[in-house]
Image (cartoon, rainbow, N blue to C red; front, side, top):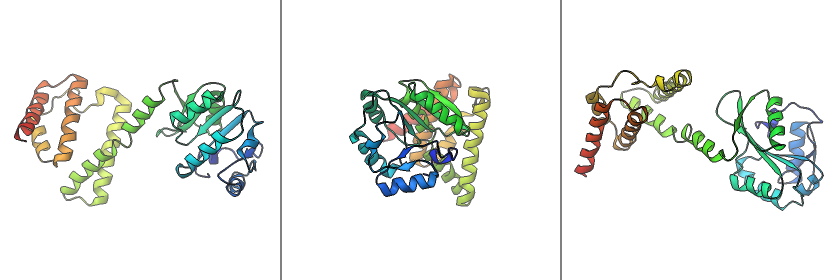
Length: 262
């Protein structure tokens, strides 16, 4: 809890009311840690509240979500904010159907900013929490939550294997593991920073066409699994930016040749 966004809220004893958890003992520890609120034995004791803030570490998410669903709470007119936890769309939909105004507040991988989505009045409350945390909100349009999650996935989990691939190639050049990882991370960070500054114009081949023979040579030196991914990425780049047909053709021929050999 102390590492969560809730744990970083100002330590105002009047900021929180009843605190529930997977057990009364856990609820007591949370209230003591936050130096605010008081523990309750049942989540149903929150029925008189207008606003309920939900946080859970991943290992307790299912149990706490089920406990909140089963609690004797009349949700009509209440605001529910899921804070700093992975509340799936089906869970959000359940409470909206029950009559609650629901919003989600979470980290988005950008320093000083938090992603906020939902409907008022819960959204208004969530934005107030962002101000309390001295961050800036990234407002997500209603109905686009899954699309936002896809963007986060593409820039995080889906990207890590490519980082590891670059580090693997560097290790094969003789770099130590730590140096290879650091250099790979630095390359990706520089590319990201240049894109944030210049957008599409930051693409390495925005104005100068790459040497097709050099690209093919580099690809041929890669392990098969990495080569397959990088070829598709290069072709995606040439198609997305509509440039460098000669390099695109050389890689397409290379792809066709590999397929025909199989």
